[in-house]
Image (cartoon, rainbow, N blue to C red):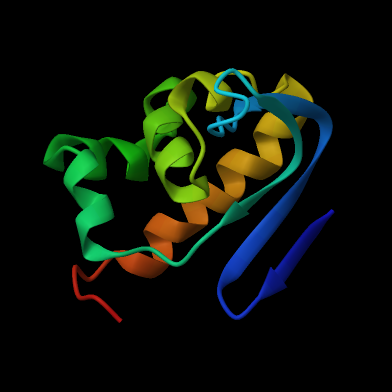
Length: 111
């Protein structure tokens, strides 16, 4: 169900989510999104994650705290990330959690 290409991972959703895609002609346009693509992380992305969250995530994953990160990493609004169906939540949160492991390994050194 997951497709991986050069460290960009796509998760196909079983239940699509609405994402605002305004244009000049259609400022209220909404598109249904059927997959989320996690892009490569940039250092600036980690500004959203408080230091205490690094420690907590190694013990357990609190999914609601991951929503802003999932939204950022997949370039969708937080309100759309909150629409992710529970069935899709497991593979999405698994991929999101894997990004932390690659970007910040246990020894504290970046790859």
